Image 1: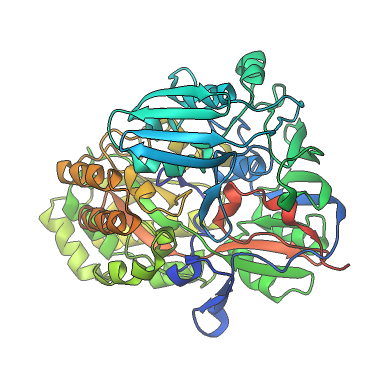
Image 2: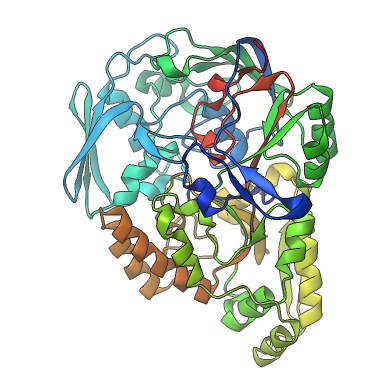
Length: 544
């Protein structure tokens, strides 16, 4: 994630427009006609408590280990169980979390003052030693954390007091601080980590964090159950329901039926193929929220045909993005001009439109694209694209890319990947063997767009195609050393221009985040902040 996050799988429910992610509490309406939609950060507040809540995930989490959680399903569960030093709000703002404050006394030092009296779910009290153990675990190669690269500039992490942690850097790194509001900043009991060993985060090892819910059970293939933690520290987020049960429904039609029948009270990232149906039902309401993601094509192999910029440009020019939005996102969205969506720029929303206005409009020109393929000597060359039944929009985009390739002389072949293996493409380099392209969601876990562009830096974990550009790397280092958000955004805009010019990632479209709430419930945050915000705690009864 964050990876620029993490580039993940679900391309349909991508990301909101800049005005929407500016936050506030007001709504923003976008689009026109039947595709018009309103973006708000939250649904109406709950009017009462519930005994239980049943929530639908589009896939079973592959882990509940915070250090390995790099996709929507595990983070959707963990957001209610584990917490970070900092917190991202539904309005996409960063605020104190398990750290009550932090200081940056010099460019290479960050000091975090921890919140006193916070307890883990086993009743033990959180200390600085727990924070050190939790964060340094990402840096241990044996952990295999996809978040390890976030700590690339860290010289040391130490307990400088019972409730104080100091991070020393080898070079300035503003992003690291911001990412402590995401998985890199999660705090787990050091004693529990040691006791659980290799079973940690699995159905047998469980987890022991500080959130409003504790993990009660994980029946593989069936459900994950959470129970309300009675000693939770944040009085403003005391859960309004006692238990939360997550069910796993991979088939989009079956998932939609669960929403309409009430078998599931709700779910994030609804199937794009069901948007029209869910917008029209009286069985609940579909909400659109702020998002930091854009649907992209990530280049996985730069040694093949796509190693030639002319071929990447040609494929981009051959894509009819307006029709892709209609087919893959239910018409709710816009063509993407960059691999980051406008919603990823929530750090400085007032400057977003100017940044994007400076970018070229996506060109749809099949004839010119075919000519580029001929100039590159790539006519008839084979490009392999991963596809999956994990989400309907993945197949829609894959078919569109295949058809576009045929029109310009590229032989785009689709390789079907099982739903449970699709996420492996983003965390296991060996899973990318034989693939040239994959459909991704390029999203930020924080409101800073620099987070996404970190993952295109040479050698970064999220740089799936091992793209390398010296100009880009130098520009990134300048941005990551800039503490002023406005100036950092200006520098990040330069990174965006290079990425658009060089196309290591081919932008497709932006769409808002989505959540369906059945008639009996309300109160959920609607946007992508749900990946780290304890969203289930705010859901309650729609009627008093």
